[in-house]
Length: 266
Length: 266
Image 1 (tube, rainbow over the protein chains, first blue to last red):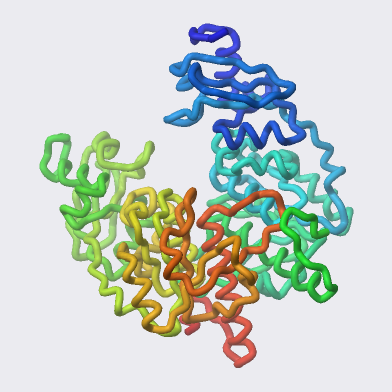
Image 2 (cartoon, one colour):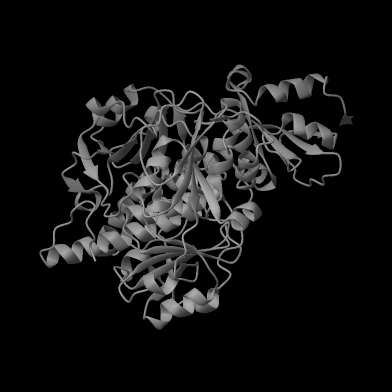
């Protein structure tokens, strides 16, 4: 069966998922493009529907409904100007954040980060460098925003990304995890502080910085010698995550542990 | 005098600057917003015009023409959805790339980088970490694209950003600068290679990677233990630039040199 009408109830439901309100009412979100759809199907997430255009071949099998729609309808439900005519409709996972908070973990906390490209890139980078979770607090952009998901390049399916409240900082500290932020009043450079494990990095809003400074255990500086006064938040997160990874590698090498790609280091 | 008509010859000229062809015909580009306009005026660049809306107060003096236009016209000439009603029209600088290629320099080369946000972020990060120049080759997005300039946050006025050809790689190598790229066949991690100075990092296209592999002296790996298969190009550039900076800091510390913000380290 091919859906051809914009008034079809399925199309109406999917259109709602472009907005945050609609996503949370339905508890669904969508990802677009063949790679993202494959990532969703390979993950532990529940894919409810795969939506394809009238002329798209799709061979994958699985516990989902395949819905075929007229190509012209993709413009109505897609977040992109030139839709790829394949989309997965995915159920939002229910995470218990306590399950991911551990003494030796590495975390990123996005505090009122507004730009979806920045948040998506932070998620992708946290995944690449083996972080244990990404938390968003204080009115950050929605983690299921289509632009966040596009920039995250499927990493949302690899590591827990949890929209939560400031209390997560207490929970981290309760486990002995040290929370760092970058700040001009920081006394040490990021490479001078031990951040290989049991460490969280809180990233502030692009314009206003970190709003939850009371929770911060230590301020660190990223060494900048040029004339740019600041870094993009996703770049700052990457420096922290890379430096944490570098420190783990060096310790592991000292202990005779060799890094394997795709293996857990901790 | 207030310009109110879209048919005014000045407005027609400025509208052309939204497109690459028009920019290179006029040899002009524009930056938007008060901060960027100030950066332009504080720089060695020649600001030809400052364009403001009908109700904008602008006190700065300088060797430029102040043009006041009806607010509604900003929508026609701006690259943003909600224009800030202040814009500087700037003459493109004429760089001799040889002047910036030196034995001890640190460089980033963007090879067919297509996304303007990525290129702008690379420029901003190169500035922050004290790189000597950014070169673009092989059909990268135009360095004066308004979205590049917005993401670069004024750094285009701080370090030389030069659109050039592959030959720049010969020139760098002629000075003894080593050219590195990230690649799966890299044998060493970025922190295991000496990249404090006399080093250039070539970044490939978001989808296809580096096209000029013949020029590369060494392949390095960025240590990734998670499931993300790659990093955003601007993140990869940042890791290289940060690691280079970290190595310089450590050497300088060993030599008793203290980092000063805004001072040249080399």
